[in-house]
Length: 169
Image 1 (cartoon, rainbow, N blue to C red):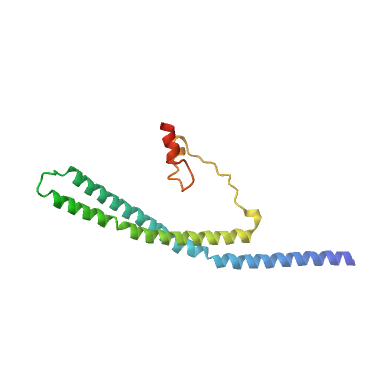
Image 2: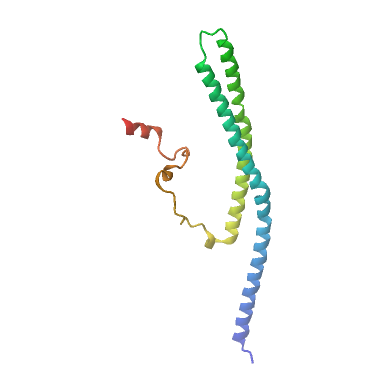
């Protein structure tokens, strides 16, 4: 024979399980709406290709600029064709600098993808709750000079040129 307390406990347990099931269904819907497969297969792959093209265009432009500058600096100024050499190489340099417009557009596309990924990850973290907050426990396993290689600092971060100059004064 069931008592009133047993029924109440069973009903409470049933309601908890029902609420858990609803939460799981809602979580699956929200995760599905994030479309992680689309991000992985389309957006991120495209962004990686864009970055490869940016690197290639930047390298080509840099090589053209350096080659042209070298030709001008090594040209004989007494040669009657010197003005033509300078003009030709200046034109090559100006043309090579046009890479900036294309790379700027490509970088804009990559930024959009990164914003989309960031937004999706933020939504996923909100969905999963505070128990899934990121813990920064990754150790930097670089050694020696590799630990010094962090790339250029963002504006306002890192050591300023004034600080470096003070070291040498």
